[in-house]
Image 1 (cartoon, rainbow, N blue to C red):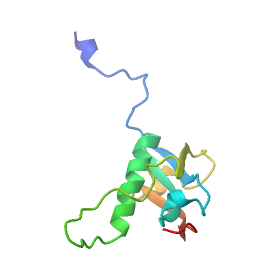
Image 2: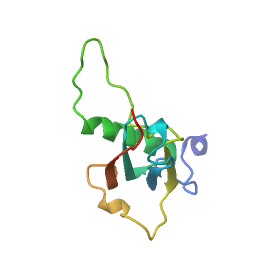
Image 3: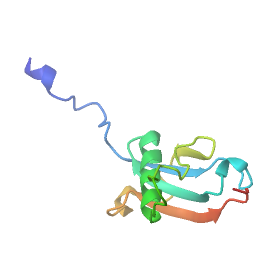
Length: 119
């Protein structure tokens, strides 16, 4: 019974961080941007889905939210939208290494670039 409760040493740790490149998938003049800034980021996360979520959290921290009436902040930077951004693993020999990420899990490669679509 003891063996059943111990983790296998041969399996990879599912929480291990990888580097993910999140880059624009839509053209800058695509109306889907709806006036959002366009970024290119490297995110340290265990999966592409978590990388997208961390990028959204990072984007929310970049803008000071001032409510006008009964409003609440939402995850609206577009990183979770697959029509706007593509997330792919970063090759080992490319970009920042995992040990270069200090307290933050997001590194900006390019941006903000305004979208050319009318809001």
